[in-house]
Amino acid sequence: MANIIVGKAFVLGDNIDTDQIIPAEHLVYSTSNPSELKMYGKFSLSGVPIEKSGLPNGSCKFIEGEELTSGYSIVIGGKNFGCGSSREHAPLSLHVAGVKIIVAESYARIFYRNSVDGGFIIPIESIEKLNDKISTGDEIEIDLGKNNLTVMTTGKTYNLKPLGSVIEIVRSGGLFNYARKKKMI
Amino acid sequence: MGMTITEKIFAKASGKKILQPGENVWLNVDVLMTHDVCGPPTINIWKNEFGVNAKIWDKNKLVIFPDHYIFTNNPHANRNVDLLRQFSAEQNLPNYFDVGTEKYKGVCHIALAEEGFNIPGTVLFGTDSHTCTSGAFGMFATGVGNTDAAFILGTGKIWEKVPESMKFSFHGEMPEYLTAKDLILHILGDITTDGATYRAMEFDGEAIEKMNMNERMSLTNMAIEAGGMNGIISVDDVTKNYLAEIGIKEYDEFYSDADSKYFSIYEYYVSSIEPTVAKPHSPDNRDTVRNVEGTKLTKCYIGSCTGGKITDFQNTAKILVGQKVKVPTFIVPASTQVAAKLSEETINGISLKEIFLNAGCIIAESSCAACLGGPSDTIGRSTDGDVVISTTNRNFPGRMGSKTSEIYLSSPLTVAASAISGVITDPRKFL
Ligand code: SF4
Image 1 (cartoon, helix red, strand yellow):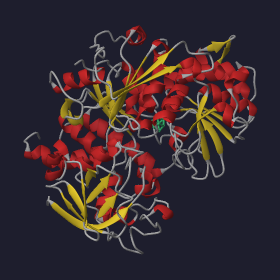
Image 2 (cartoon, rainbow over the protein chains, first blue to last red; image 1 turned 90 degrees about the horizontal axis):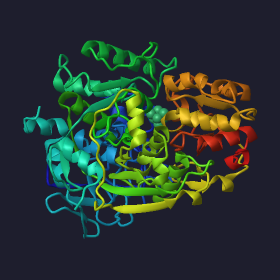
Image 3 (cartoon, rainbow over the protein chains, first blue to last red; image 1 turned 120 degrees about the horizontal axis):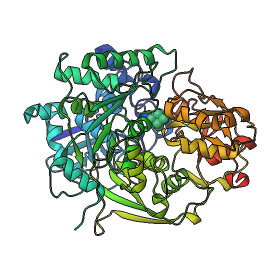
Image 4 (cartoon, protein in one colour; image 1 turned 90 degrees about the vertical axis):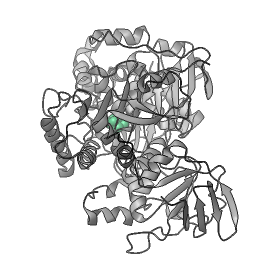
């Protein structure tokens, strides 16, 4: 895992639930078949109401046209990101779409665990509300060593909460890899 | 500094003497529960990681209930049950409760209680967000995703963050028109859907002490609706009697110390709480039944792990006895045991089952049924434009079927009163 992550931001509001991240009707695809797996990328964030998709203006497509992955690799959220069902397809779909990291004010517990333990995405908590300070399309640099986020366009830097003890699982790329490294399994 | 009941169970299960909220610890898991929706993908991950010939960590500690998409012609749903059946045979599992056999139980969270898997002081994980229901038995119980469940399947262990605790005390004696469901909907209105994220929700007070286990489970069931990691109620005589009846006598009893630290404490006087609803489309969209009275309904639904227990049907019957329903009303017993009790329990010599049939209700087989929509042939599923009042726990858009239907959540008393009138009705009118 690199310490510096750069990419374009896709900005969302509060209470993004797992149905907005991957609507239940798309859960039919097999996750072990590589060509079916791609469909989770294609439909990632497809349940977000269009006026709230890509703040502040909305109406931004996370996935363009017939693409299978997104041009945005950093998601900026608000409170209670990933609430709703326990479906692991939610962080999986963001991962398949190419998202590396989410920065949100808070996470629903099961989504947070699934993101870390499945090795899908890095969920970071912001200290202050950021989804009104960053715009969709902004170039972002996140430094996981210094725990901060810089908006390249404005040069402004915001501090982030450290990952705490889950960092080892994140660095290993998921719970199973971590446990192997620690000789637990 | 004292410790809360949740902290004490964490200490026991992680082998530590002291621990702090916020720290991550490895817990030894006493029971893992799964069902037909999350069981197959969990098994798939486990096989990928541990090999196709591996054995699970302890076959006596895995409990599988097919319950979600059961009575359907949907091929994907049926394939899932086949996979569970195959896996259970392969691993020689004693606790697989197959549909179509005498062992079939119905909704997992209620079956766990009935079958004696809820043991005070223990740790239970389940691949279902409402696993927190079991916390009514003075134990730690919570939901996890498939990767975590697969890890438990192989190792019997999982990491968890020690939660901070919130306390909700209910004082006074419950009036006849109020149920546990009204109390938890009331809390949700106060703290909203992320008010307890990553925290334990502890319930106590005189009103709780007088509640039976079914009512207590309605409270802990909906802890997740506030984002809670777990809901928990300490063991008392009510718990002990319930357990003694199913032959469980030995367990650890933990209680919160008087000087334990809480993130926040809420004190309620039940006499000041009214019959409550959650309006569409969120469980925290609270209002009093009085304020939404007269809302025209197209369906009534009494069922699920929250509102399909025998106490819920006793409450329903109390109002429906000698009455006729004005809109289609579905009765879905959470478990086969509850279904059997509908024929045994009576009011004025008439069985609950007869009361419901005489009133014109439709009685379905035990399962999750339309609580989460389900395949198109699911009984009670909401259709476009429906306005439903239901004893279930979630009313997100599309949760019970159609995205254009509206769901009100309430107590069984309120659903029953509304079924008779065809519009949302305060149960006090019929008591
Ligand atoms: S009854 Fe509803 S809430 Fe309960 S386990 Fe089934 S689907 Fe989930």
